[in-house]
Image (cartoon, rainbow, N blue to C red; front, side):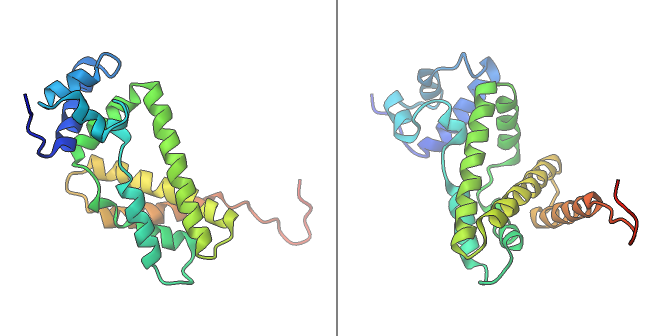
Length: 197
């Protein structure tokens, strides 16, 4: 029996998230996900390599970031370039409820936490390479990506916690908070003529 394929990816994602929440990630099978979405297993594998990829598939965010980096005027510093690129994040974010459910599922499953770290490392390397192609020193680009990722992570946490929040305002606030923390962390300079201990 043929099954309706309309919005197959979204239906599979929703079905997987519901099943992971109801019965746990480990106890959920691809067959159950496909059945819940009223699709075949074959349809599932058109979109995802395995059930884990339902939570991690898609490079839309990376593609948006890279396009946004390319749009930043030449000569802009590495971190300001990234922060400008990160402003496109709301264009590809899933609804808050979905992101909160996804985060809870990942937090409860160490193998998924590991996959999340791998995906973040890949994104960091992709962004570092993009900044390097723009003429930034590789080490400076990597530091900017690490700092920028921390700012973005904090922004998304704040965004998910407040349904009324404006992403651009939160991104700006998180960047300001990062600068405050960095300024506080600067080592004190000894007074002239006094030896350091």
